[in-house]
Image (cartoon, rainbow, N blue to C red; front, side):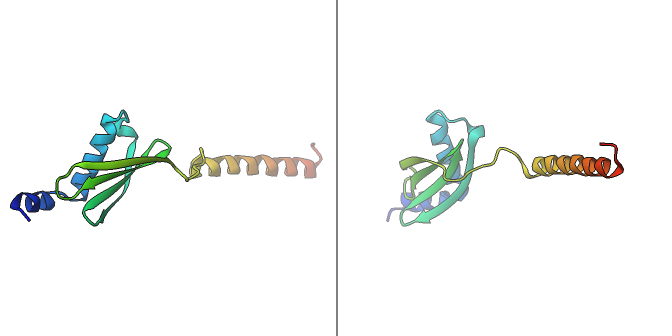
Amino acid sequence: MSSDSDTARRRLDAERVTWLAQGFLNRLGYKRAELRPTKVSLEGEKYLVEVNVQKRTATVQVDLATGEIKGFQIEESEEWNFPLSKSMMLLIGGGVGIVVAALVILKLTGML
């Protein structure tokens, strides 16, 4: 091995590879604000970087020796995200519970 590849190997870590992948996806037209890295792994002589892109998952392959992007794949995400947050669901459920309790009390007191 040459000293250049050893130097490149030492310089590449998960953070730098993630920035390379995000920059690559940014050049493809995806805004950096929409990119959320989820996983970086070293497999043989390449890093695999998984990034959530809107409702998709992008996998970018980065060569360990040179730091070049060797390939990428964008797939539809298999996750199903509910549009309401947990706190919003609790708020709605609590409101419905209060209304039901009020109706039961009104019916028991004979006002309804």
